[in-house]
Length: 226
Image (cartoon, rainbow, N blue to C red):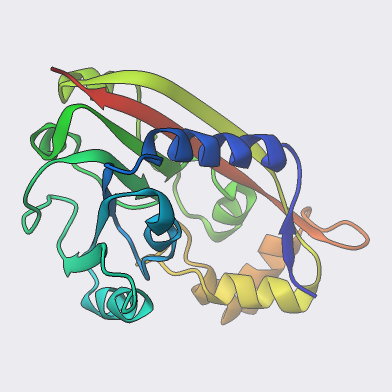
């Protein structure tokens, strides 16, 4: 039982990690993590950074992050939106994974040459599930031209769309139950309560052993201008 994904994930996910770790690593690096959640990613950088600040709009998640980092003195967490209203100072690196962002707010919070790295869920993510539920496909959450308008120089812009495979029906129900429109781009939890909707999701997407949908992501790396 469990979820697993395959396709070009190994290459693409390692690209995402390498893009993050190259500019992050450094004894004097100050890192801002936007949409930090429980702070797990930011805390994993603790051995190789000078300091880190994680922000999240969800006060409960900030409480979780504070508890997770209680023994790590160089990483802190505050409640703030992606508009960065409770963020002071400038950072060498700003990270954002699957969270809202305000590009035009970033130059004021990045040092000259500072780097912004974001991974965003693509508009074609879980396309067959959205189609079965009658949910419209949104516009692309990010595009290269957005960075120049915000005063950032785009260094890298990547996109991938690969199969995402759920191994068994129990895992599919668990996975869909965790998806709601507050935390995802699909209302999977509502589908579980509707037999017709659930059958529509299964139709044409099940092989002899597994359920297949897709994972669509963007990765962008940009630098603050001098």
